[in-house]
Image 1 (tube, rainbow, N blue to C red):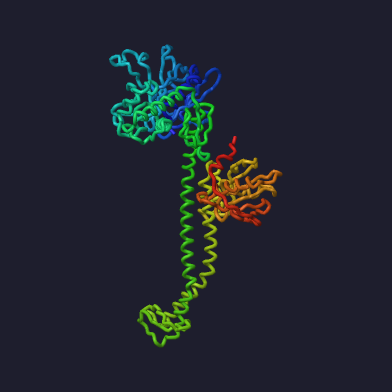
Image 2 (tube, rainbow, N blue to C red; image 1 turned 90 degrees about the vertical axis):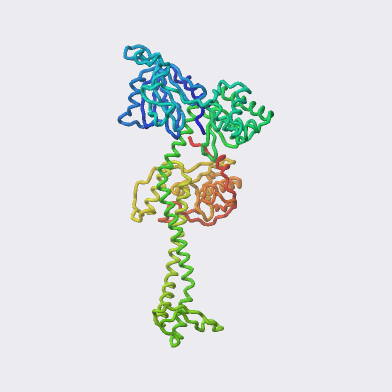
Length: 601
């Protein structure tokens, strides 16, 4: 999951074909660490994104648009001043490092053509976007001693001596490329000799680390791929490699380098429908993951980073709601535990009546100031003696009255406790279902539905219960296609579950839900056909997987004809009743869900 030198190499080739010869028409800075250039070439408009974000630095051609600030930042204004109307004359990579340079031909104040270079350094938290002026375009009066280093015109991030002694990045300073740290250029690799030199530098470390620290632009992903193709453990020690194994490593290195120098094959790698990684060369180490080819390197990068950004935004938006729901769930769970303890004490209240009866029957033998009394228990067939605790500051009759009061209070509490326990159990079940939906949803509209549901249900504020507010635009349930061609719908939240249970089905369809646990409503669309056992089992596995008990080895799933599913009036979202159901025992299967999923357009 790294924007490494190999991805940079293939992206640079793609940008050369697409942008060289194009004119820069507009420049925007929608975020503090992101620049966008509108470039027109042969009548086609392209939008180049350059981001120096510390977590997700990247460069690619994008189709997504962003709102721009009303007042452009100073770096954006500098780029507009120097680059608007310029022609992209050259795009190239610095060695095999994560640095892309854009030479842009512009005219100076004397209407003379000069070249200015925009540099994108994709270096994690050290990423930066820098505009420099080539030495040949610097007037002699400003060139200190004929230094051939280019001069920085402006930079997105200012780096002073307090942050870096080796390399200051400030306007007017000489530009220096990021330090190579004795790493070799991957594209100048000489078989055998270079690899032996790299391994000999770090004989006691890990093999993968030796490759990463020996070559510019080699990421952990590529280092692991080389080791995987060689059949070697990436954590093994280079000094322990035999001659034969070194030969395997050299062959694997040459094999990977051949894939790098070949035309790019951009692919996205998925695990359980979630994008996990990307690469511009085939990665054999990911043979167990599903993969999807991308039409271009830029399309691959945009798909990956769009999903990553969306996930980050989603987590930020959902964090507060999840925290409040989790806190409320823990509170209700603790309340339920306390109620069960109270019920246990109330059910044992008969002893208080016995204490009162024995004190009353033996009042003549007791006196104030006693701590306890051992009295014959006439409730017992054998009249076994019973120790009765007393309060020293109460008379015998006051002790008896206190026990009678505790007995009557416990008896009254039994009925109310049963009611409270039933109500609290419903709340705990409902909250666990909402939390399960929140953990499963991935889109902002789905999150807004859960937020709306929490508001109208009065989960956090009882005054909001039943208040009519505008409901968010309805999101759509997940869609799957069984191995025999039946469409299967799976809800991701209670509003989608309501739609499945009340509107989206016909009488001949089949409705499924995990037994006695929160989970998704599942619907098999019959569409005039007989629903087979194989499809029923697949839908059952989906119902088990998209539930709160998906980690269990075996899960019971109820299934019933759609016409027997009803939603009571004033019931909470997602709550239904059904009769005439059958039950099957299935194994939750995430791989099946990934296989049967229908890709949305």
